[in-house]
Amino acid sequence: MLTSQSVAASADNGEPVGLNNTLHEPVSATGVAVPDHVYTVPARNGRAVRLTCGQVIRIINTHGTQVCDTWAFKADDLSEFMSMEHARAWIDRIIPRVGDPLVTNRRRPIMTLIADTSPGVHDTLMAACDAYRYTTLGVKDYHDNCADNMRMALKAIGLRAREVPQPFNVWMNIPVASDGSVQWLAPVSKAGDYIDLRAEMDCIVVMSACPQDIIPINDNHPVEVQFVVLSPSEA
Amino acid sequence: MLTSQSVAASADNGEPVGLNNTLHEPVSATGVAVPDHVYTVPARNGRAVRLTCGQVIRIINTHGTQVCDTWAFKADDLSEFMSMEHARAWIDRIIPRVGDPLVTNRRRPIMTLIADTSPGVHDTLMAACDAYRYTTLGVKDYHDNCADNMRMALKAIGLRAREVPQPFNVWMNIPVASDGSVQWLAPVSKAGDYIDLRAEMDCIVVMSACPQDIIPINDNHPVEVQFVVLSPSEA
Image (cartoon, rainbow over all chains, first blue to last red; front, side, top):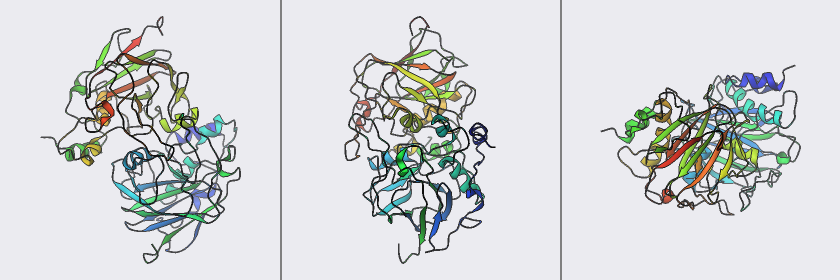
């Protein structure tokens, strides 16, 4: 049995680990998706998809209750990536709105949020869940987690990132009170809500259907999300 | 003349660059400080200091108007570092308070905030200023920045980190409104205010007296800060 301790030790080397099928089910060997095809990110799994500049990815909250941790990496240099700490400074907000560019750690737009049918409640503040998170929550054995999903999804298309950046936690409901305290609540989106993100450079988008089932951010029941790379005519 | 373009290109390689004296003025060759000695981080410069587990560093806002970007790295493995995105999740707050542990990207405490004489207005949301930041603000030539200061301060004691983590921006006043928008304001601390951070593991603390002089976070006039590694009897 792979324990959380051994998994954590492996993750320290930056190598993908995990016990779900993310590593074996890429959208294609290169990460290129068929336009207009609806792909599923199964519950607790991750997927990576390659976008060319100008392409739009639609991420769909199939059941309305699921958080999707989302990353974007520059296609030819994964050390440049969508960075929430730079994005917040760029847009002067802690949650992106429609029209907002999302910049990289080199402060240039990598994607723009161009549509959002949900109430716009997302999170940029909380680290991806990882093996350490579940260990501190009392889990003894391996627990699927977004950090491993990101590593596995990239590895599944032959790529590797040197770190797990702060994700754009789409639909994650983390209200910040006036005293700076936060809560971890279920999403306020409804079934079928989607966001559209337009690539501003060639990039790799990684999504993880967050497997958190101990605190209520996924309404205590992690499920799948879906995504589509839109044909130019639809975007 | 070193331009911001050439500097940015160098920074992409992770190598320290910069035109101030940070690289040449370490507290000592190894980063070990003399206990109780008051060191100065000159305006627009950075310093790295080595702490053993249990030691306390006092960072002093000499003039009350200065932001100090602060990082902590595990002494024997700089890939583990104080991580604001993990710390926020740990303390359920966006600004640490006295008594709060600050955890690493592996979710274990590296420092604890044990004293704060200021009103407690700090920031964990905004990336360190960097060459890209000043380019986007219209600066043509090299501008001192906290990211380069961090790299130079580490290099000055023979170390290198593979990334510039989100810093703990001590005294930086970034109020978050109920609609998620943020402002960039001058510090509310007073001259002589200090914070005490206790090391929970052997670590390297890096401080940068933020050189931002275009927006008012340093009251439009970057100045020095000071620090002291306290003797055990005082901590």
